[in-house]
Image 1: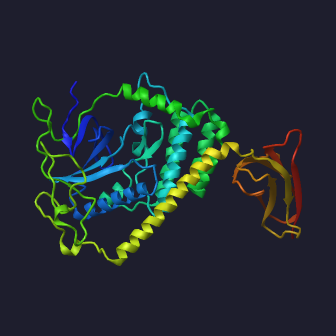
Image 2: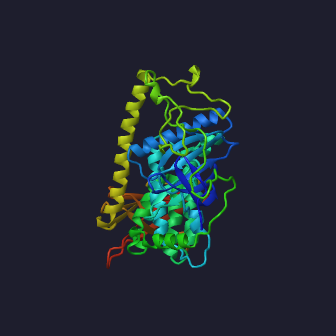
Amino acid sequence: MNTNRGTIAGFQLTHRTWTGESGTWSSAVAPDGRPGSALRLDLRLIADPAARERLVAAVMADRGLAQGGLTGLVPIADLIAAGNEVWLLTAEPAGPTLTDLLSVTPGVSRPDAGSVATVLTETAQTLLALHAAGLAHGALHPGTVVIAADGSALLSERGLAEALHGHPATPERDVTAWASLARGLAASWATASPEAAGLFERAAATAVTHGLAPARDVLLAGRDLLPSGFTTRDRLVKTLHQWSARDVPTQPRHPAPAAQGGGGDAGDEGDIVTLLHVPKAGESRAEDVIMRFGPGVPVETTAAQIWRAGRDQQQTELPSDRLPDRGAPARRRRNRTALASVILALMVVGILAVWLLRGSAPPLAVTGVEVTAPKKTQGCDTAVKITGVLTTNGSAGEIRYRWKRSDRKEPIDQAEQVAAGKTSHEVSLEWTVKGEGSFKGTASLQLLSPLPEGKKLQDKASFTYKCS
């Protein structure tokens, strides 16, 4: 079957297309023969020149992150204008996405709980790096999480929704979306392991209440609940291969430039202009021309350096009121960007080191329990706070414990995550007493796990209530 649908800036478009947040994606082969993708942006979204400027800024930010060492985003090869169209070209495939793999396909095995942990941990790491750089994704959902050939999770279309729709992208929205992703994947891929499903639910709840970093730590601490060897991503890669073998070619909503004739050479695509570089003042005019791609012309996607507002404005220089400042402030911005890139690279390395070395850390152990209550007699209608302190060995993990009140039979079971580096963890019980009379209340705290072998750790404390 001939899967050639034409070329765009040297990228050979192949058989598969799908609808993304901002336009229509096509699988493609880059000029160097490696697989990639091409996103044809919705013409309605790029009609506003301001939206195009925001788009360029978002793509440039992504390229800066990649140069700084961040590997969690689908790498961008170029952003080009072809006539009145704008295309985003990626250096790696932007599919399949989680949406593809979540669909029930005959003959394709479903990933397991270990796959869920891999996807959630890697997407959390990428989002944390973005937020540290003052950026956000803005459209995180299964359709923008790409599974690479090695089973790693990459994010696509970062910042495009904000740029094209003008909707602010915030870290808070990313965190909420990540929690939703965690719950959705747990419901689809972790049904065979209730313990792992509970782990993902705790991670989602922690993200909403405390943020992504503690949620990631919940996943790391719960690795014993996951299938052995899950870090190799074997189950996810197996699903990926099965899905790829059964992938059915689709037809694009917006046809790409068609290939001509039996020879397979692409037709004249018109002027192809990269939008990712504007020449500095004083640069040679030889670098300030529009390059054409077509028969007999070498394919290089970084050939031209001008921004063009549309097909009807064939300009070779930017209007003077839109020329960026290239003086000292720009140099300072570049210096800050370089420093931020180094910090980002160190963050990513540190996070990966924590993930890889976690298995060598000693398991969490609790060595003591102490409970205290107010010594002063409590007055009318009082909320009494009982405090418990659990002494640990400083490792990360989950603590399960039980409160018992002397005024009721039902115990109160709770669980909390303990971060590494702290040798004590405080828990509390709020006991509300109302009405006239005298009352002595006793609260007991019992450790459920991790419990030292052959030992029982618990303590209790009492308070006095008097109201007349």
